[in-house]
Image 1 (cartoon, one colour):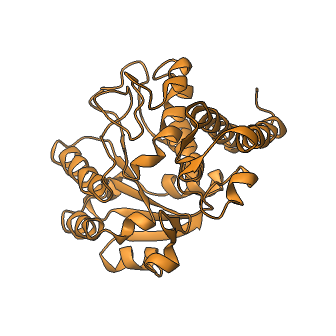
Image 2 (image 1 turned 45 degrees about the vertical axis):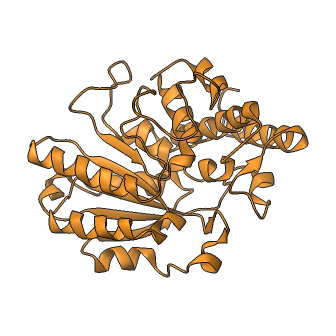
Length: 281
């Protein structure tokens, strides 16, 4: 996909995420919206996957360590054809294949079960090490939350990945500056996350997490020939609720009720964005 197509894909992910969570009436809407752009780039332009064969052994893999953003991942997977779009209406309902947090046993296209913050980081490093040991020409992508980086397990993984020269591991930090109980600066100031990863032996950079062009160019600049060297961390500077102004404006929006006027406004805003980009509604 080119830049315009990726922007449309991200807008489609956002609109379907709003509708999905709105159908349930509550959920982690804002933290799902802030990763829509990176998911659009990964599934629209970068990752080597086969929607009609989700378990293809040579595929690239994604670990959504901030598992509560599962709805955005489900929207991306459905739009790519991993499963019917109608499944999105069953989010977190009894007998659903789309639970609140991603579960690889239930959802086609989900490579790793996540939810307990920090653990997805270690799981991603394990997958990347296995790919390297098997000499596969594939990568593991990891999405972390900035608040999640409070977890010591993330930094144990960072040491491990550098030690084992996991150049096929690319981590993204959704730096939306909010977490469950407030802003990240109030709860636990992380400082310069990219510099921290660099000090642990990673290649690290920061960019506009709402710009699909920047994200795509950064990933394409990481050659697979570097898999013998160092892992990469890309810090995505984002806004919690990105792309839906009314959700962005809510101060405490980590987990929120999404119904009535809030839902109607969010759907209208997400629809207008998609229309303005030239996408089908």
